[in-house]
Amino acid sequence: MSDVKPISITLVDYQDAQQMSHLIQQLSHYALDDMGGGEDLSAAVKQRLLIDLPQQQQNFSLLAWVGDECVGMTNCLWGYSTFAAQPLVNIHDLGVQKEYRGMGISTALLSAVETHAGSRNACKVTLEVLGNNLIAKASYSKFGFNAYELSAGTGKAEFWQKYL
Image (tube, rainbow, N blue to C red; front, top):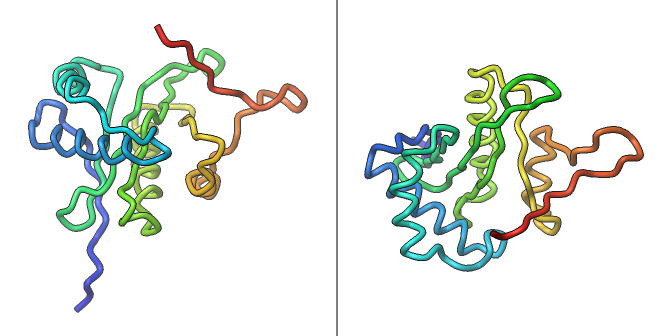
């Protein structure tokens, strides 16, 4: 008998309280990590997520499981590529609990995102990654992602923000 537990990925039903609880818990793990900002989400934000996410038709989330233990998540946003005239998916958050890293869980999540995106004829999957998150960058690169450059000489795309 093997002690290896299977990895599985499930699509979150935002109407299911237990699934939402798992999602918020995994988002907390991600936020507490240095690469997630190092601070937990406030109670107010967690409460708003429970109310707001079910109303967001352009979002979907996936949970990663090792056996019956929830160990990771990704939150994704549907967008639209005007250059391809097709849907696209942006991975907004992707996190795996520290003690479960190196087991192929992020690859399983990325594969599930790609499958879900393909089911709606998306032309691509995009994501943002911190410049010093070398482990994530290696994982994304291994999966086939690369820094976006429209054409040689134009430079790599940068992700900017302005708080409102």
